[in-house]
Image (cartoon, rainbow over the protein chains, first blue to last red):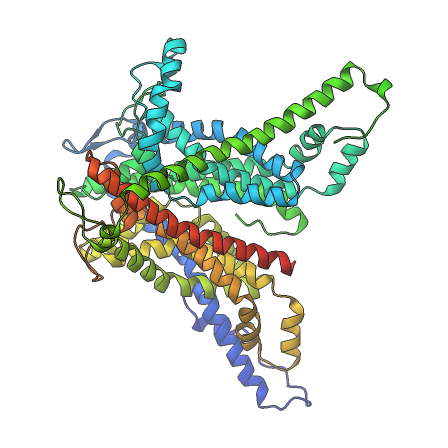
Length: 333
Length: 291
C-alpha cells in the first residue's frame, strides 16, 4: 500500500517540445503519477491481503502445529476434553465427498458443455447455458435446506434402499441408511460444482479453432467423432483445469455439506455413513470453541484447506490458461 | 448432421458410426436435462413451501421463542442489508480502483501479480476467509461483530469486482482513449472521464453480481457476525443475517422454525436471483455489442 514510492516512476528529464506550452507538462505528469500510484496501491492491497491471510493462518495455528506436528494430519482422535486433535476424519471426509462429487459432475458437465458448444444453436445454447449458470447463483445454505427436506428423504426411500437390498454386500453400501451422509453430501456437491465445471469447459471448447472441426468433418467424421477427436483431445488440458477448479470448489463448500453429511468424525468405507469435512467442522465448532489449543487446531484445519485450495487453483488456472490463452484471450473464471 | 452419402456406402460400420452419433447427441442433451432437474426442484420447493409460510409478520417482526407461533425475520433482513452495505463500503474502492489499474496498466509485473493473486483468492473457500477475519478482527476486538462480518464479505467480493471492472474497461475501444489523449487530456482524466464513464453501466452490473453472491454467503458469517435474535444495528455487536438464520432454523428440530426457514429462503433467493438475472443479461448484452 505504499503509493508514494511509485511517484518517482516517470523519467522527468526530456525537454518538452516547443509546440506544447511548457507549463502543462510537469503538472500532467504529476497527475498521472499520483493516479497510477493510487490505483496501483489499491491493486497491491490484494497481494498484501493474500500474503496476510497465509501469514495469519500460519501464525494462529502455530500452537497446534507445535503440539501435534505432522501427526495432526493422520490421527483421528478429535477430543476437546483431552485436548488431543487429529484431523484425519475431516480430511478423509472432505476428499471422499469431493471425489464423489467429481465422479458425478464431470461426465455431466462434459455432456452439457459439448451440447452447448457443438450441437445447440445460438439462442438455445444461450438459454440453457443461462439456466445452468443459475444453479451457481443459488446460495449454498438454500441447497442445504433443500437437501435436508427433499434430497435426503428421497435418497433414503429410493436409491439407498435399493442399493442396500441389492448391493448391500459391498463395503460402500453397508450399514443403516439415513439419507443424510456421505452420499447425500457428494450429490449436493455435484449439483453445486456442475455449473463451474461446465462453464469453464464451454469456454475451453469455444477456444478450439473452427478449422480443427472443419478438418475432421471434411474427412467424413460424424458430429460425435468430431467432438471427440477435434474438440476433446484439443481441449484436454483445459478440461483437466476445469475439473481441478471444480474440485477446489467442492473441497471448500461448507453450508450444504454441513447440513447433509451428518457431522460425525469417523472414517467409514460406507457411503451411507455420516462423515465430516474440514469446512463443516469449522462451521460447527469454531464459534463455540474455547481454549487456545482447540481454536488453534481448528485454525490449522483452515490452514490445510487454504493451502490445498490455493495449490489446486494455481495448477488449474495454469492448465485452463494454456488452452484458452493460446489465442490471446484472458480466461475469465 | 454429417455429409449426405450414397446409400451403397452405408455398410454396417457406417451405420454403427451414425448410430453412435445419434446416441451421443441424445446423451449430451440428457445431461442438460439432468442438470435442470435440481434447479426446477429447488425453485418449486422454495416457491411452494415459502409461499405458504410467508406473510407480513415475517417482514415486520422479530423471531419468537420456540413454541410461540408467528414472528418473523425482520432483524435478519435488515442485518443482511447492513452487512452487504458494509462490505461494499470496504470492498468496492479496492475492487474498482484495483480493476482500473489492471485494465489500464495491464502489462506491468505488478498487474500480472495482482491479477494472479485475485484469481487465486477467488478460489479460497469462504469459510477460510471467515477464519482469517476471526483471527484478524474478532480476536483483537474480543467480540463477534457486524464489522467483522462486513470485512469478511468484502474480502470475498474484492477479487470478483476487480476482475469484472478490468474486463469491462477493456471492452471500451482504444480509439476513444486515443481521441481523448490526442486532445491533450491527461491520462488519468482520460481513464476516469472517458474509459470509466463508458464502462460504468457494465461495472455497476458486475457489482450487483458480486452483491448477489455475498448476500447468500453463510459460512464466513458464522463466527464473524455470529447472529443475533434481537435488533442490532450497531457495528460492534453480533448481528443477525438472513442466511445464518435460515441455517439455524433449518437444522433445528422445530416444525415452526422449518416453515420460517422456507420463508427466509424464498426472500433470499428472490433477492439474489433478481440481482443475478438483471446483471447477467445486462452484462451479456453489453459485452455482445462491444465485440
